[in-house]
Length: 251
Ligand code: NAD
Ligand code: ZN
Image 1 (cartoon, rainbow, N blue to C red):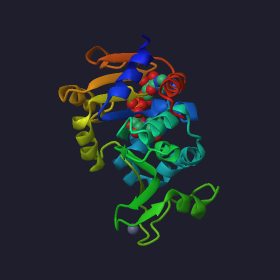
Image 2 (cartoon, rainbow, N blue to C red; image 1 turned 90 degrees about the vertical axis):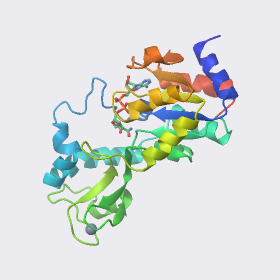
Image 3 (cartoon, rainbow, N blue to C red; image 1 turned 60 degrees about the vertical axis):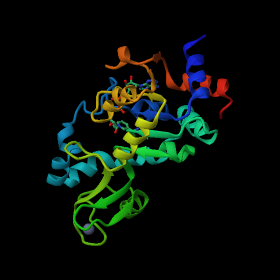
């Protein structure tokens, strides 16, 4: 039996399957991940544009760095892995997707039970008055103009209008606790496209094992947990997802 066939059997027999996804599930949508060679930090200090202190110190610089990237996220297409996971949920074969991605592509593909443990770029929140704004609204306020000033909160005028993504130096949102409950309930835990180097999310893998789940890792590169899990499938996610869709009759 091939390794993908073994995974298909696990999913067919699962009572409560949960997937954990990382940036690797979205690279085939044209969104670069963080730890492959292209390296989005090649010319930029991550602490200046991806930490809460960097944001508070210089919101304009933050938006100058992220604006084009957020615009690209808004138009990125879904891919086979997003479709696989949405199809598995529709058929009752998986119960939840926990994602480190902020791109919203799982929901666009039709997944409903999505736990966005690193937040989403789609919503902004004012750190001073808690007013919320959608990214579409922000785009329409700023258009394509080059920004010379940071965006201001429409309610209180503060420049601390921050995308609801978890920056370095910030706590994970309460949805992380809900994600942990899913992991404790899981009998199959499927990790896709994550280097498993970012904590506390990487800690979900040993947690799943401790609670008795069969853990499967699908990734192009090795991860620090490969020796501790039940099945490791090395390869390109688009290919693996299409194979699984045809085996399971999803899609
Ligand atoms: P990561 O960049 O650390 O790891 C991605 C992993 O996916 C790598 O090991 C890589 O080998 C693998 N991979 C990439 N493309 C693949 C493919 N087509 N097939 C198989 N494997 C593939 O990503 P991470 O573990 O999610 O951590 C990065 C952090 O950055 C996350 O916390 C996330 O919040 C954020 N991030 C999000 C996005 C997004 O929303 N799409 C993109 C980049 C980074
Ligand atoms: Zn405000």
